[in-house]
Every structure is written in C-alpha cells, then in structure tokens.
Length: 249
Image 1: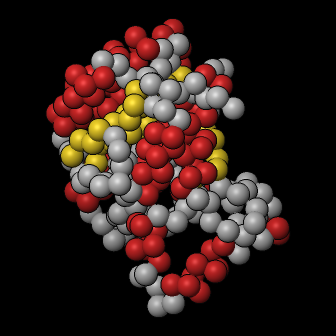
Image 2: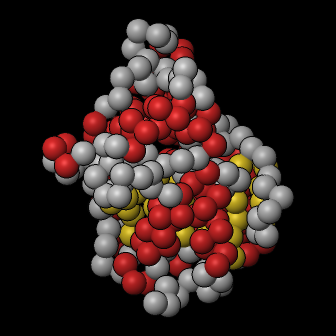
C-alpha cells in the first residue's frame, strides 16, 4: 500500500530513541523528509536533527521555525517526547507535579501551536502519543498520567477546532512496548526477566510486548492520505491489553 508520504515533511519530537526513533525510521522508509527534535542526536538517523530541550516554549518555536527554514512546510506533527517520571500523589510534591506536566504535556501544546500555520497550509495531520495509563491508571505516577489524560482530551478538542482547516488529529495509545526507558524500569526489579514474563503473560495477543515498529506503523497510517477520514480518535496498539477479557490472559 502506497501511503503517499514521499517528500512529505514530518516533524517528530523525541525521535532519537524508543518509539520516536521507530517513527522516524518508518517515515524515512516511506520517503518522507523528517525532522527529529530531541535532547540528543541519534548517529544512525539520516534525517535533519535538532538538539533541543522542549520544556522552554521558545525551543518549540525554534524547532518549528528551523523545520520551515529547511523544508518550507510541515505536513505532519508527531508529538511523542515524554517520560514516565513516577511523580506520585504521596511520593512527590506540587512542584514535582508541575515539573512532570512540563516534561510530558506542555510541549505537545507548544509544538502544535507554533506549527499550526504551516499545518493549515498543508492541511496536515497531528498524531500524539499517549499511554494506556491515561485510561487504566498505574499508581505512583500522577504527573505522567495527568499529562497523558490531557493529551487524549486535547486530541478531541483540537480535532473539533481544526475541522474547518482540514487538519486531522488523532492519538495512539501504547501499553507495553520495549524501549530503553522500559528496560531501565525493568532493571529496577530484583528479577527483571521474571517481571517481564509476568507482564507478557497478561497481553492477550501472542503474549508478547508490542514493538515500537508496530506503534510507528499506526502513526504512518494516521498521517497518510489512507486515513483521510479519521480524526479525533484514540487508537490502541496493545495486543488487546486494555480492553480484552482478563480471563484470556
């Protein structure tokens, strides 16, 4: 299937590793012109990379402006950067909570705000990476979950607001995806492999983790012309983890 993404300009946040890296690679494979914005560069990525901390709003503006200076357009914005920082209700503080929202939410708005004029010209698409924790909870991670829940709400809000401009807005919700950050979390358990086996046993389809490439494939579809009548949706790529009967696991 031709996704018609050749020469489209795709701007990805958090593209240096994990899910973001897989999204960048998938877009490059489709022939897109890709810009990755991350704190650090990835030597293996043959795309334009912008080293930036996205917390300051002016850095989001700079990333958009640099993309436009280089390519003259933005056809798709993929909001992906974030980290499950474990800022909980008990083990955290109001300043910690505010900082977590800065790390995981504010730049989603800022990137979309600064890219909006370009997206209007291209009648482009926005895809935001959320998390199953926004609908299931996890415990001990209030900041991250609040951010991901807000991302789901903003997906619907922006989809409505941007209808007159033909801009489609959707969110993808991963559940259990093996990324460097996920592996780091596993290493915090006394027996990481035992913990991993326990997790995958609860994933109905294939009893395995979702791959970052599977998340990226959904993102490619959503930003493509093949998804031209899909907007305001929350798409789960999780092997049935969230919705299927737990008896199956």
